[in-house]
Amino acid sequence: MKNLLLIDDDQQFSHFFATATKSMGMNCKVINESKNIMLFDLKPIEHIIIDLLMPEYDGLQILRFLKEKDYRGHISFTSGQDMLLLKSAQELCELHQLRFHSLLKKPFSLYGLDELFNLESFVKISDEEKPKEIINQVEFSDTELMPHLKIAIETSSLDVFFQPQIELKTNRVSGFEALARWKLNGTFIPPTRFIAIAEKGGIISQLTAIIIDKSLQQFSTFVSSIKKSCLSINLSALELSQSDVPDLLKQKAAEYNIAPSSITLEITETVLLEKNTLSLEILTRLRLMGFKLSIDDFGTGYSSVNMLKNGPFTELKIDRTFISSMHNSNQTRVIVESIIDMATRLNLRIVAEGVEDNVTIDRLIRMGCTIAQGYVFAKPMAKSEILTWLNDWHKIHNISLKNDKVHFLRGLFK
Image (cartoon, rainbow, N blue to C red; front, top):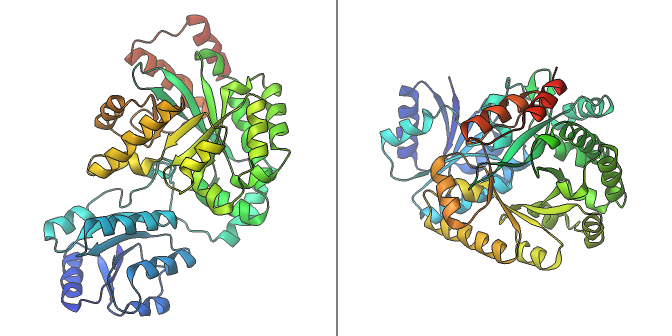
């Protein structure tokens, strides 16, 4: 039985909601006075539904409270307000790194309620946190995770998975993004979580060094099988204040015989803005060494244009929140088209992330987007899975792969 919490000052609506969800096999608690959320035990609650407009504590203040409490369940909004306002609340929820689920515009029917709670995923999560990779739902606090993360770094037991990036017009594999993975006692810990813990705990440098080494070492075993393939690695914004990062990357690239021009370093736009750690000197040094630079999650912060003007970037990644909402938002489609047009004029490589269906692929091609990644192509994979996926992908799309390189790859995975 799913445990829900409805926060809504309308008692009549609350009664309807609680009764309807009970008939669907769920247990729904109700808070009519929003300030009482402060006294409520949230541990058993899997999903909170919040009315935006309430006296005393409004929905946005509740979001801030849930962020402070590190609430890990799902969050939906309900309101009779304009849908644009609900969308703004959704964006704020995601910026707080809370787990947004759905928007419910009042009034809605029982059918709409049934649709909401019959979604198997029960939460709209990113490529990095797909349910397939979550083994179980044991919860750990940040304090509990810290010593385990230190051990994982010391023993080099973190993993690196690779998600392909595809040329949309040719279906050729353009490259891979390296994604850090960590499982603790069978539980998948999202990268956004353990990276934040590493930053707070002052061990982000050690974590980054491990991920860079593993990413380049594993990439070096299959890079020669794919023409002009590149590897993207995410850099923590805090690392941009460490003057030894360019030298570390240069050393590791040379150690694994990978040209710096085949390596793209992704810097998250919102993190750069929030932390104020953008170091033009370090970014410029990286470019002088031949590395490429990407603005990740483009459009989610407020420094976008200024960064393009002043930073030596070579790539722009359109954030998945824009890509996923193109179907039902004309405003989003206009924004994405404008971003692609601007990047094309600036001669930047354009990557759309979070692509999950063929309709989106067709639309991106018409807009002029060149590269995409997402579950419609492939999930993030361990090195041992890449050979099979590559062979299948080339067969499906009639792309030749030289026999000698196939044999070479097979030898690597024995």
